[in-house]
Amino acid sequence: MSIDAKLENPQGKLLVVARQVDLSTVQHACEIQKDRLTDMTLRDMSFWTADFPLYTMEDREGKFDLNGDVFLYLADRKHNLAFQHIDDAVADIKANDNFFPDDSDIGSVINAKSTLRVRVNDLGLQGTDDELLYFVIDTKNYSKMDKFQRPVAERVHGKGRALYRTMKMLSDAGEKKISVGILNPKYVQKKLQEHGKQSLARVFALDSFVNNSVASAGSRDVDDYGGRLRGVLLTSVAGKQEIIAPKFYDISQVIAESSRESSFAPDQIKIMQNILEQNNYKIIKGESR
Image (cartoon, rainbow, N blue to C red; front, side):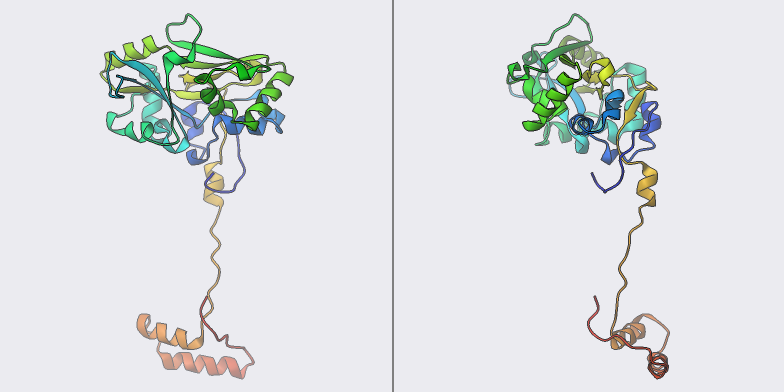
């Protein structure tokens, strides 16, 4: 977080709540899951999160190739192109179901050390939907996830001890099996070919416990009135005034500075000094700080 301020959960359409929140403070899914451990009211809420899912197609050398494999790049808040271009992203998703970033922008995502890269076909996805598939996590036996699924799950639910705590919370709440939604690679290829783009993106969503705490790296429900962003309200940021410590000067410094920068003559300052001292006001001496 960029500042120490209270987190809020405004609800409404994505573009509406995005104008209320400092997007640099919006929480990732794993941060929300951590807060849900102690704040049970958050378990009844669904969120768009700061995680950014970007899909592209590459050959074996990692070069863009519409005949290659589909890769998911899961980026963090700092590299969230949808948040950086929120008006374009929402308009694109509403018109085309997908956000198509400028090809020149995607390097900031795929080259970032914090971005997770995974080949979609390695995730063992289930389902028959043409658009969105998923993999399942057994909250009591989450260690059975393979080496490809686990890093994605850790982005959503936390890593190490945090993952254990989240899985226990979900299991104790009756969420025995949860899922992570990923775009169908055939769908990604079709849409990239149709639009002649190198990548497409969605927004990341984390559902409430009521909806089985489903996480999706393929949400396009930007007009969902039930969605929320968890972050610091812009009104809080604007109202947080910077406190500037006063400076203290030796009187000789005041005289020197006024001679350079002001029409207020040094002899007038000396007169003021005499008046103050005659009336028992103490003149602070020493270095400025």
